[in-house]
Image 1 (cartoon, rainbow, N blue to C red):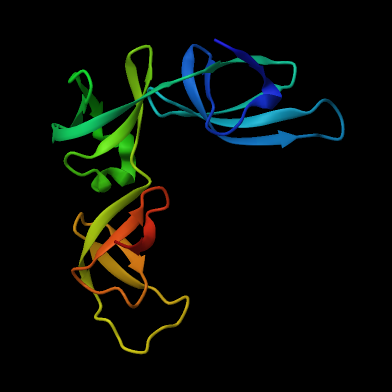
Image 2 (image 1 turned 90 degrees about the horizontal axis):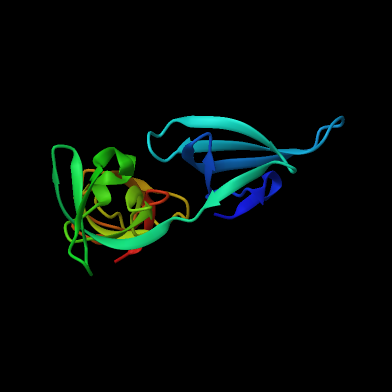
Length: 187
């Protein structure tokens, strides 16, 4: 595995540190008035979700891990585990539902997601950036209400509440950004 200097760490990098796999969440480069510069790195453990703050000097070497990404199709959920299938090999894997966190409601039957593997161990799952949902409840459309920054609450078919523009009505299909969990556009 390639080794990188402590000042080359970027958010999103996966590092092998203290015998575990850690994803760099936030990186701040600090240059104090006295002493050498360092990178203050906030990391999340990919296996158990714990967090760690660590300082790396530019002379420190860390191992950068490359994760293999595979498309997996969502089949079903049972006992808090999500079951996915590889479309090429038809192998099935199980991942805990907590892995998706508050984005779990956006996972739909048959949806293809990206699962990241490290030596055949599934570590992380990423939903598509945009998902189409149906609005089941919102205030009625009011004619002439076109204020640029006015949004109204809406409840989607998966139970998630989002803010939508005033011209969007009930039973309409909208596209939701799964990273920000916000309205993106009409479908």
